[in-house]
Image 1: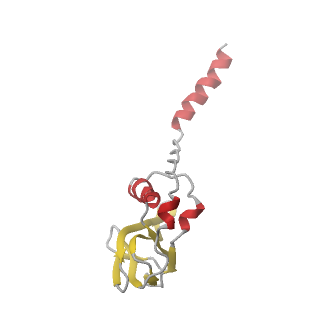
Image 2: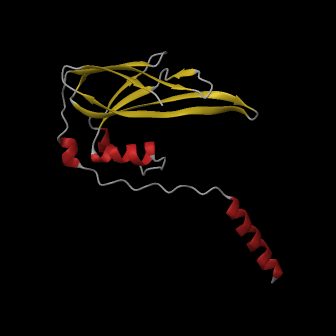
Image 3: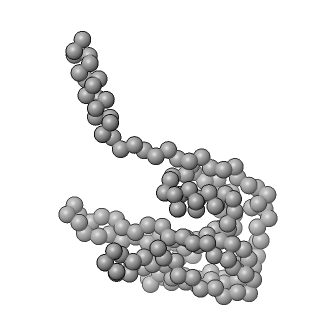
Length: 163
């Protein structure tokens, strides 16, 4: 009997040491009407720069990073609240959520620009990543930066995207 309980007790003890995986939060239902109502054309423009500061004060630019403008909807708001602000993983997005998504690439200094942007509220987001030396080798640093902005027809907005 001891031979049966010993491996069981050992595996239970070892499983207690395992790092628990966070469960993905289910997505809210996709709001078709909300996405259908989004403006399709516009005359707004946006320029800016994406960067982060290290703990030591160095500036790391989002060189070559994709920069996204995602219309604010009840669906995209869940990403912002749950994943970006809350740090919880979300279930995979509905492919229809890419409707209205605008993407550009930052230059070597993290500068980006968008033109002919439809009017509305948007999540402006990108990633900044670099590697820092440690006693274990190079470790990835950085992360996602995002903010909410408003674009109007005819406007020329400028935004610093940082954290």
